[in-house]
Structures are given as structure tokens and as C-alpha cells.
Length: 216
Image (cartoon, rainbow, N blue to C red; front, side):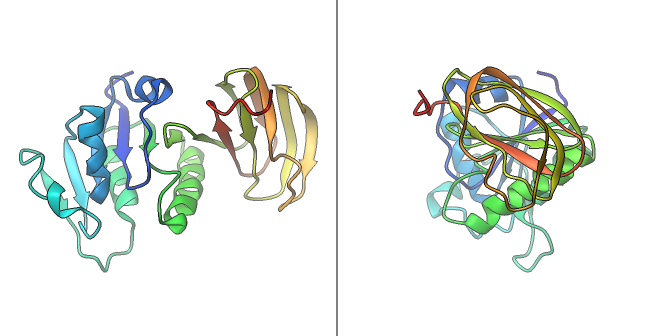
């Protein structure tokens, strides 16, 4: 990893796994509001703590006294996570790991994280969303490869009509496939190892469950 990799600590659930530790190795950290609770579990000290602090537990208020805080009013135009990403970009981020982005009590935030990740990918950023047990990577025009354990599950929900979708090294491969918007055709596939994806046009996300081997 390089100093252009930033992990954004978000408020969703986070399970500490080997894949998570590898993804954040060598990263710099910024915490968004209650996402700071993950810092102690991970054994890291963020360089900045941002947000309106409305979801910060009382017992966390006095923690990390040396971490600079950047407070925002509750009535603001962006989520705490988006503010944290903007701060990371201002510090030179090229790769973003959104930790705690995929699970929690707020499904609206989880959905927004997925949409925002696709937007960031279109701007040229390398983005990974993770809960530790589940991972997501934007898929836009071009190609990506994910190193997944054999027999682990993944899905490719489209955020638009997808054209020229190719999935290789999976139980259910596709070649130059047209996926109508809203179709469930690409839900619940099974990896054979490194899975290659390419897309001619459209917006999608690859949702993978590396520790779920129920596809055996």
C-alpha cells in the first residue's frame, strides 16, 4: 500500500477478517462520526475525525483525544462518509477503502455508499467497500479482476442497463451479455477462483461474500 490509500471508517458493522486486514494494510485512516468505534478494534489511530457526531456513543466521546476533530452541523448537504472521503481526496487519496459501508441499521446509508462508490470509480478512484465478511467493487466500462476463494458467492446487481457484460471463471459465465435494468440474472453466482469481469457500458457493483462457501 502507499500513502495514497485511505480507509474511511464508517458506522456500519465491521468484522475483523484476514481479507480486511490485508485491504487496509499500510493505509491512512479517517473516521466518520460513529465509525471511530472501529479504530480501537483495528488498532489504528485516524488522522482526522469528521461528522456531526450524532451517532457517536457517549463512551467514545473522550477517546482518541489527540485526533483532530472536524465537526459539522446536523443540517448539512452531505453524509459524514462523503465528507470523510472528500477530506481523503484533498489529502491525495487514489485508493479508498470504505470500511463499515455495507451493513448496519441504516439501509439508506448502505445504498448510498454503493451508489457513491460507482460515482467515485467513474472519477478514476480505486474503491473497495467492505464489512469484513462482504466486499463490493464498482463495475463500470472496462475490466476488473477479483481474487475470490473457490466456491464463494458473488452477485453483480446493475444500477442501469448493462451492455457487453462478460464474467469469466465462474460457475455461470457470461459473454458479451445484455442485462436489462432490474434483472436478477446476475444474482448468486459462484467463483472458481480469480473472477474476471468486463463491461462495455452501464453501471454495476460486484458484491462478493468471500467467506460464504455455500455455493459448494
